[in-house]
Amino acid sequence: MINQNLIGFEKIPQTIPHFCLESFRRNAKGNALNYKIQDVWVHLTGAEVVGKIKRIALGLASLGVKAGDRIAVISENRPEWSLTDLAILSLRAINVPIYTTQAVEQIRYILEDSDAKILFVSGKKLWNHAERAVQSVERLEKLVFFEEDAVPPNDNRALALADVERFGEETEKIDSQSFENLLGKIETEDLATIIYTSGTTGEPKGVMLTHENFTTSILAVSKALPIQNTDRSLAVLPLSHIFERTVFYVLCTNGVAIHFCAAFDQIGTFLTEVRPTIMTAVPRLFEQVYHKIVKKGKSAGGWKSSLFEWALAVGQEYWEAKDSHKSVSPILAAKHMIASKLVFSKWREGVGGSLRFFVSGGAPLSKKLSYAFWAAGIPILQGYGMTEACVTCVNRPEDNKVGSIGTPFEGIEMKIAEKNGEILIRGRNVMRGYLNKPEETAKVIDEEGFYHTGDVGYKDEDGHFYVTDRIKDLFKLSNGKYVAPLQVESLLKQSPLVSQAVAIGSGRKQVGALIVPDWDALKQTLADEGISAEGSREELCENPHVVKRVQRDAVELTREMNDYERVKRVYLLPREFSIEKGEMTPTLKIKRGVIDDKYEEAIDEICGS
Image 1: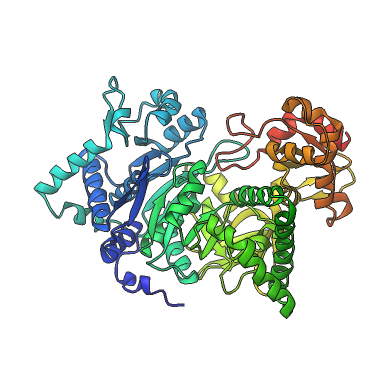
Image 2: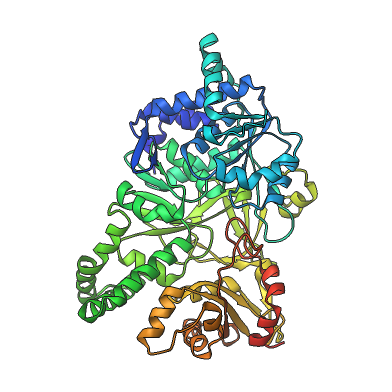
């Protein structure tokens, strides 16, 4: 596939700033980067973006930033994140992103371990969170705030991004070629970033990624997916995460208009205003959207609810047939056309009405939800990647298999280890190693250069890969049988009554589940079915009728699994698992060891000791 957007890129240096800056200049878009202030969308032109990157880079250089310096950034999604990132990379310096949800002790650890020289902070809210970690880090020379009113008056290290831009403007007046001279010094092999893994166990590890690691992914993704310079995208996932950051570079290179979304609660409004044509997301978003749609459809009452449920059933049957390459009968095709017009058209409008495809990553998405969205004319292409190897594979629109993570991108080797079924990856996308941890690096990159992902999976006859679980997450029952919790949890989350689910039972007699209900949906269902829903959440969690109602869904949804894998009993929890309580990582992965310890008595109760 020839991507017209990439013609000529082979003639420029293969580095991130060169790719992005070249595209901003070439496409000269009036809406290259976009963000919202109160109720008004602000559009930055390609020329304005280049100018800002240039001024920030030169301003940082005037503050003493040089090649190899580590510059940390803690901020929600906003243009300043990406402008600062590209400015840092233009100096051959190294960006160290920090999740906004990172615990104080982890922020301190990252700043000290990376030897960060400067920290960028978005505003007052994040400064209030990070200040305690920052105060004890002596190495930090400067604190730069995106928002001027957030600059603490009593810290002589602090200044605003606007000040940095002014310094850069002064430098450019003296030497108009100073920025181009800096750009000319960047090498493909230069370190671009150190991203700390969120880590479900132990302290975070700093993943060292070069410009080549990213440009390999930029070119591979651009060749594999039909991305156009007329596309619009909404950046929702954290830019501190490898997935969204790689996607940002891909979209920049291809001239896509990017719109920043700083918080998940803004997504609904932004989708209808931006009307994105391509977008990245995680299964959690699709699960929430699906459950809201189902709740609304079933609560309509009368013939409308009947029509909705009929359309869902038709959609499942239609796309299951398409996915398994079975013939679709004329009657089923006609039914699907009617369902699309009467019901699914509203789904499409809910995501803006212009979406060509979603790319989903981070965790498995159940087949049922995938079929529902595909049937509604909202294609979801599941992909796969990790911090240590950027983005490695994805389903293509013309070659999609629901449930799979697709096929590898050009230049990337993937195989299944004979010994334990682990997915192995080799290519120029694989990291240089873990910062200050050569022993840890040696554990995951073997002598042949294959990165050991820690994921268990398989490859089908058509070359599509599938992830079944994490090796370290697999647990063994007392009968010796192994259970893959991710598969169980993916099924449980199909229930509209379930907000979060954790499969449990390690060393016990049977599989159970800790479930945090979707309380609104559960109370409505209980009322509809004549079950008393009086009392606090804590009281409802102990109400045997309420527990049995949620358990009924769990048993039904896991019925098709092997008998030993099926959920037999559930235990309800009143509040969601959280990062703050140490139960989840900043990338929203469950810390299973913490959960097992914290809820040991509950697990014994429902799984048998």
